[in-house]
Each structure stands twice: as structure tokens, then as C-alpha cells.
Length: 317
Image (cartoon, rainbow, N blue to C red; front, side):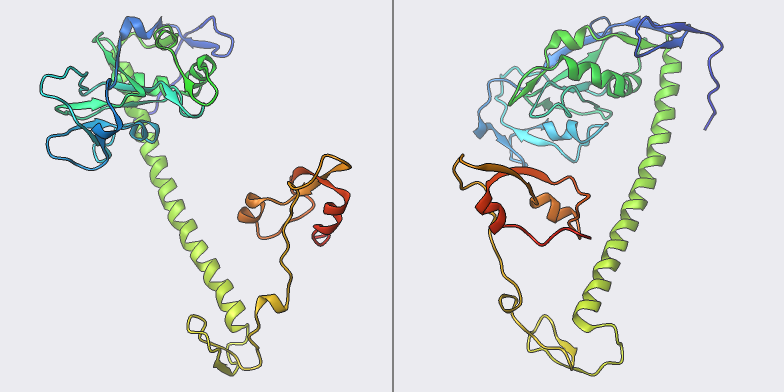
């Protein structure tokens, strides 16, 4: 893979957060490069299926765009399309925008269709973007839209509370700075393909290593707490099928005889004599082996009586 040297000359982009760009790059907007088109319309819930149904047509679901940079043809859903029904079909080279989402993290994200398809459609929450100017490479434009600076620009433009929405005009008028030569755009896209594929392989190897280490950790803990540390200790049957043998000098007891379980009840009190207390919640327990004073525990309100009654052992680890 070639090493790309810095460009000989740069110019001010006129945008403070972007700074300088190569001198020969140009400024444009999506509306001058191609056009946006809508996804499926006029459909009811009974028209859709995640599994193949005879006579139904494939469509690209929301998750296929949210989870991928390149559309996966293995993750298509199906929709009922009438014989004379007019719906927009997608084609190779189309980009797809998430125009509506439940969070800001996904809004405005794009994915590229890089395969030849026939009779494939787009879900209702998205817009397709089809490049009509032959001077632009779809792979490069996809990377450009997904660049951190562009994502932040689109997120700022999104509006909503329970549902976040992005207007077509905000996408059409987004400032784009691109090489004037499509061959340079393609070279940048291929360079990024190579680099990202290399990083993804590294991530997969690390994930596999983490999985193996977690399995090893679980096995070590299980061995220590059910068999002890002395490999030569005499064993006896525990009387419990899933536990098997335990060291001969160990005993089996029920948890209720060695500990007490208690509720918090912090949400069941009047507004009188309230005070703030530190609350250990679900995620604190789920993500940690120990709860310590250094942790950023949630604050909640409780009465003096509840605070005293439900206090856990002092966090002194």
C-alpha cells in the first residue's frame, strides 16, 4: 500500500473547526452532487416480515444502515409490494441516511450499497442518496459523510425528543470539501478500506483473546470456590448434582443461614425530612466485582429512618 505524502500547498477552508485543506480541493454541497429519495411509504405493519415470504420483495432495514458502513445483503428484510405499486428501488452506489432515530448517536449515519441488486427497497425511516455527477466517488463520499466532523454537523441540525429527526434540507446544504479529481477520491477511499480492514482484523483478534481470558478467569474462580486451593485435599460428594465433589472438611449451607437480604425502599417515602443518600444501582453491581467509596454512585432521596435501615456495610475497600 502506497504511503501518502503531505500535499505541497494548503488553503484556509473558511471554517474554524476544519482549518486548512489541500489547495486543489473544492467546496460543494450534496444537492449539487446527487439527489435524495424516499424509502417505503404507505405501508402497514402487516406488510413487513423479517423472514423470507414468497412474493415479497427485499428491503434494507434500519439496523443494516446503523450497524454497517457497507450494506450487508445477508441482513435484508422483506415487504409486500403490489404489482403496480410505485416505490423507489435502490441500486449499486446508493448511500442511505438515517433520517429518524431514537438517539443522536445514529442520526445522519450513512451506509453504502456496494453490490448489484434487483428489486430491493429502502425502509421508511431512511433516505437514499444517489450520485448523479460522475466526478464523485461514492465510496469517498460515504467516508466523508461518516467522518467525525460531518457527523457532528448533522447531529447539531437534528431535532426532537422521543424521536430525533433530520430534515432533507439540512443534508442537501451540508458543506463538502473534496478532491477535484475522482481518481484521488477513489485512492483515498481504497486507502481507508485497507486501513479499516486491518484495524477490524486486529479488533476481532483482541475480542477473541478477551473472550478466552474471561473464560479462563471464570474457570479459575469456579475451581477455587468449589474445590479449594489444595489439589491433594480429600474430597466428598456434596449431594448436589451440578456441584459434584467438595473438599472433605467443607460443609454445605443455605445462604439464608449466613446472610440477610434487604430491599432499599428509597422510593417509598414521604417528602418530609428527605436527605440525599448514595445509591448502589444495577449497573454498579453488574459492571464491578467490588463497590468502593471511589465509585461515582447515584444520589437518591430517603428519610433518615430509611437511610439508617438500609445502609450497607461501610465502603472501606
